[in-house]
Structure formats: C-alpha cells, structure tokens
Length: 101
Image 1 (spheres, rainbow, N blue to C red):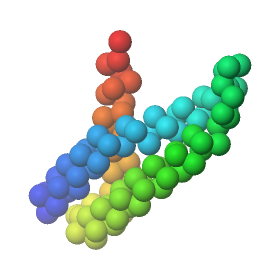
Image 2 (image 1 turned 90 degrees about the horizontal axis):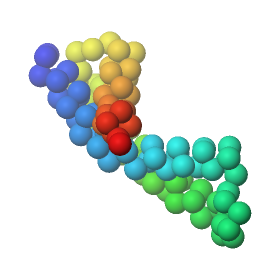
Image 3 (image 1 turned 90 degrees about the vertical axis):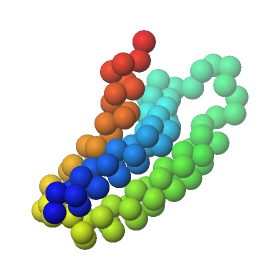
Image 4 (image 1 turned 120 degrees about the vertical axis):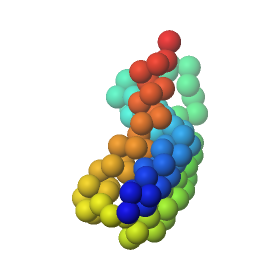
C-alpha cells in the first residue's frame, strides 16, 4: 500500500514540473487584469486569454486523467489523496517562487 501512495506522490511531483507554465500564465493574466495593460500594448489581452485557456485546459485534462487512475489504486482516503495531489503538484512552482532571485 505504501508503494501506491508513494507512486501518487511521485507522479504529482513530476506533473508539478510542467505545471509551472499554466500557473505562470494564470498569474500573468490575473496581474494584468488587476494592474491593466501597459500603455504601449496595442494587441490587448485576448490573445493571452486564448493561449492560457488552451494551455491550462490541456494541463488540467492531463492532471485529472493521471490522478483519477491513481486515486482508484491509492490507499489514502479520497479527500486526503486530492489534498496531497494538489500540494505536491504546486511544490515545484512554490520552490521556484521561494528561490528566485
């Protein structure tokens, strides 16, 4: 049973590495909407919204597919499994934020 739990944790840590891109895109969109676009930016945010929607949607599909198959075989309770999965996925992004210059 421990192997199945460790496999889920390892898979989510590995999925957290490419998750840096969708998390950054979401942060970029949120910060741009709050602060407003730069005065010389003439293209608007529509292109970035389309790109972010595709990237985040594809990543969410991959993440949910992997985790649904692993959740069925895990020894953890469902609530604990999903909490550990989300936190393990966000760990590489958090490490980059903490250790960035």
